[in-house]
Every structure is written in structure tokens, then in C-alpha cells.
Image (tube, rainbow, N blue to C red; front, side, top):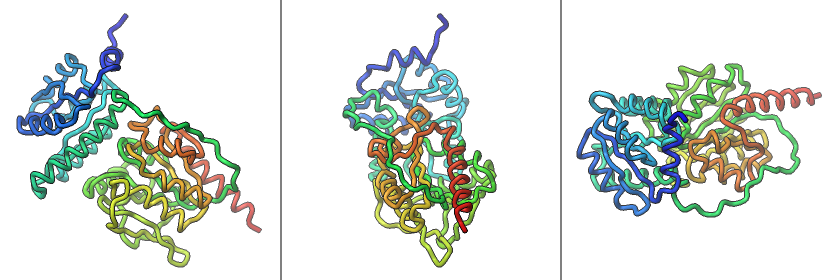
Length: 371
């Protein structure tokens, strides 16, 4: 039998407790920082460390870690090169990038996410105090590691899921609202380019990311999609064929002024530890568009979007979600399914065609029904 590194990795790690992490960074200071932060949690152990890309690939083969923390800037083979090799040999091995909060760092991080990185954590920033940066990195890192490696930790009994929905009138769709988190940049990079330039409705999106990252994500999507993709701005009018991404650290809502629908931004308290929050956007479109909403919940950790999905359903709108197999983390969509709020579940590859089908069909039926 030909050796299959993915199969071997799964066999070795299937029953491991706690989660074993490999730290890859050329900086001894960064390796110690990560080691100390992870050592505080009994469900995570540092399996080893590597100071360069070539050594990292060797250590992965030797140690069979459950997750890799990967620096981007390293001499020789950099983090992107290592990531490409990891994806060839271990397609399902979670990889979290450790990136700087600079424009270049954000751009390279988005490259990494597009190439298959599972998530990222921003390095301490000069604008943060050491105590604040350690607290932020620790909180984000622990949460993301446990979410990405949940199969290796004791799991609560899942709630029964159902996609049965009661028969409801099918209203015309006037807006598509999308919520996503972990795995979202990759999912959006696949979904948005599949939508046609003549899509007759606007799209509003919440992707959990810091301010700089959301702007660069919008710019990147704008270069690969037929639709116009921009970061949300206060007072902008929603028009057909436009995509608006909520700016980092701001909730994005929609307000109605006469026959126009306008974007609004605020810095109200976080919801679900997030700003922007999917729940805020979904509630807003449900209030302003009523039943004429199609909400989409993509891959992401946590439960943001569940209460918002309930508001959309209560207003008469519809909710579709990404399936577990194609999600990096089936937290957000899974919670919507468990709450019996999903009208349908689709693999990522099927969501764009379904959005186009529902929008086109509903608008055609509504036009035919008019006297």
C-alpha cells in the first residue's frame, strides 16, 4: 500500500488529548511568547518548535501535530511556501498564521488564507501595551486552536438538528446578507466571483476581521469578481450588483430613507465578542427589508448569526447555510441548523448558484404577479 501522510497523520492524532501544537517562527522571542501563552491551558501542549520552513516540514512529519502555528516572514522558505507544502501533504491539518498588523502583513495573511490557511492571529502591535497584547493574543489563539481542533477535545452532546421548515409565502428577494468568520476569506473568494455582474440585488457582508484586513479583503474580491466590492461607508446607497463588507471594528446596519436603503456604521458594544457582528446586520436587514431578505451563514466559529437568523425568519425571510464538510469550522452555520433556523444546507460550491436561482426566480414570480 502506498504511504498516505494524511491517513497516517489522522491515525496518529485521532485519539490524542490534549491538542498538540507545533510552533514555527524564526524568532526565539516569538516562539517563547507562544509557548508561554499556550502552556497556560491544560488542553493544549506545545509538541515542538521549528525556526525555519524546511525544519518545520521535518518536524510535522516527526511529531504529527494537531495544529501548526506558522510565521509568515522567515528566511529561506517563508510561511507561504511552507503552507503550500503542508496543503500538498496534509490537506486537513489546521494551520494558523501568526501575522503582523501592518498593511503588508495583512496582504500576505490574505494570501495565506486564500492558499488554505485555517485562520490567523495578529502579532502584538507597538500601539498595544505588553499586557494588553498578551491578553489579546492569548484569548484569540486559545479560542481558535480549540475551535479548529475540537475533534481532539471532549465535546458536549450536540443538539438535534433539523432543516424542516413550515410552509411560508415565498417573497421577492431584495437583498442578500452574508455572515462568516473563520474560513470566510477563502469561502468569499470562491462564492463572490461566481455571482453575475447583473445580479439585481445588493449584497451586504460581515466578515470577522480587523479594520485594515476588511479593506484589503474588499479590494482583493473586487479584482476577482464581476460585481463591485467595497468596504462599507456611512450613508452609501445600496444598489443592485454591489457588495459591501462591514469595516473592521464597526457594526454595519441598513436604514431606509424614502425608497432608498442606506448603509450606517456604529461602534456600539460588541455582540458575541464581535464588532462587526452578523447578528447586528441580520437584525437590521430584517427590520428594513422585512420578508425580502435572503440570509447566508458561512463557515465560522461561535454562534454569531443565530439570533440574527431568527430575526430574518421571523420577518418572513429565508436562511441558507454552508454544510459541515466544506466549512473550515461548522460553528456559526451549525448553530443555525441546531436552532432549526436553516431553510436549506448547501456545500460552498452550491451556495452561489442557489443565491442566483432564488433571487431570479422570486423576482420573476413577483413581476409576473403584478397587475
